[in-house]
Length: 232
Picture 1 (cartoon, rainbow, N blue to C red):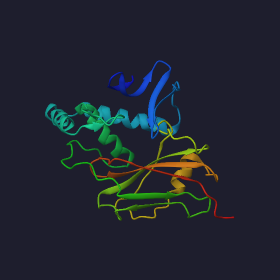
Picture 2: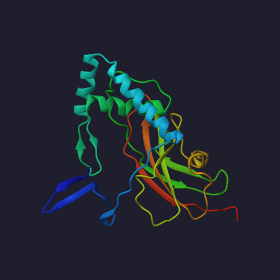
Picture 3: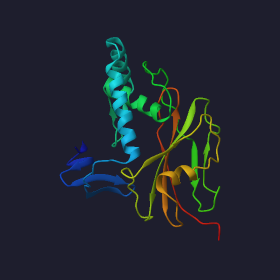
Picture 4: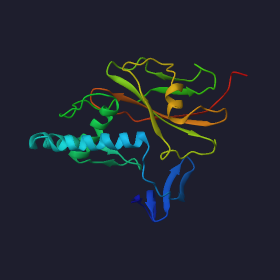
């Protein structure tokens, strides 16, 4: 279903109607042909489905007061949708959101919602992706991250530098150890998901700060670069 902000006609729209998908970039709104998804059977996709199913099932085992606590937390901790608007989740979805992230990080589930706010995002960040071994890195501040904070990276690898819409191409590549310092080499993480990088490819990384104790995630920083080859 498409989301839109009413204007004189339509002020902003995001999502799909029929065979058309509406989105926007720095140059304004645009429409692209809607891709019909196939059934995901890859190992990462199956693992993601299993994590969501486990979290949903665990929520059902909570007591009525515990469920009410999650409902109250969700009502005071809205999330931001594609159009930058605040959306109130149900207690069920809020529980799944935080605990599915914790499961991906290998952390035990929480039954009580956090009292802390989402972590602050990175102040500054940049990436370099190089065919040369040990030359791929992300530099960021503040450094190191907080004692409970981890670096949460999603990425997309594109053959054309002109492609800017990557939401349907992003894949989780790593959740770092806590208190990570800058100059993190993420090449092995990237190539484990996308294969060997090639000079001239475009790499987009969405870098967020992740609270490894609560499952809360900062607003991501979008970083992009072209793969270089300094071996020659």
